[in-house]
Image (cartoon, rainbow, N blue to C red):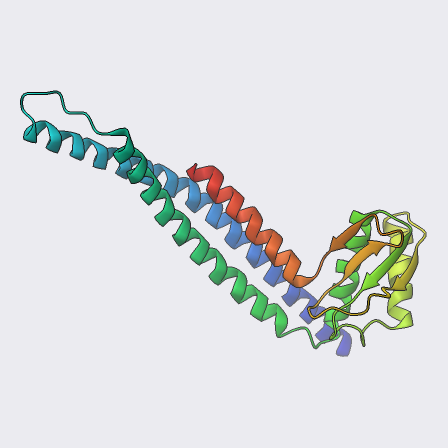
Length: 210
């Protein structure tokens, strides 16, 4: 029964991450739709301004100042960015809170191991330090460390020398892995993971609009 509960918790964690990916994909689709809609609205506004100018200045050919075009475009883009960033922050905050509610379970140990292996794969060095959060340090037993070593050998074909980072703990959750020679580092804390998601989505939105 305990194993069933742990499996259910792991499924919940995976479902939460999947939900985040689905929502981000939805935002990508909405960004494309909004880009097309905003371009149409902008063109309609420009056309309206041109018609108004032509009516007001009957003796000359109406020309909209290039600065007006730029200001109008900038305002439309600014509003679109604000809207997308607001939605993005709400989604990421919801997911962060839901993951946080599961961090005190044994299922979190599995997630911590997986995040550590991901970071080790990025660093790609055999001699590494693992720096843990203040709430993770008690989870990191000798048995957990050995599981990381064994998993790295079987899945990454790496023979590891793993030690806790002499720099001590950090204030977040999740691992920071660095090579013992100090040349490489991967911050795979939960905070860093969400920052990367936020940056990726911001770049996508900016690309769509600009």
